[in-house]
Image (cartoon, rainbow, N blue to C red; front, top):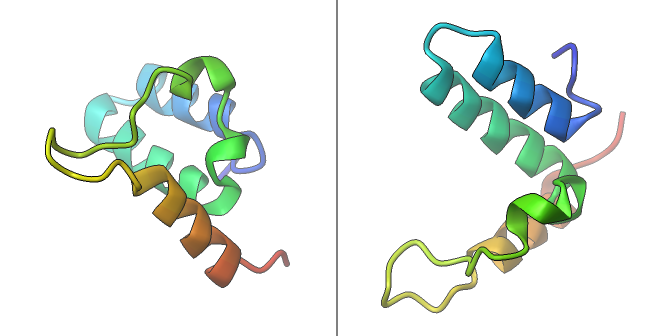
Length: 76
């Protein structure tokens, strides 16, 4: 909540400042990713990602996440 405006800081803090850091970071990453979309994350974190969840999917995960963010997120 303190770093929701800054996705990178939010995720880094979740990893470094919590005891159950893998779980907390996954939840924080999902939340700030949903709020800010792919463009809110540092390019160096996503440049080499394929957007696939398995070897046989179509790689549209990042595209679908962005479409959901556009459709459902409304700034306060």
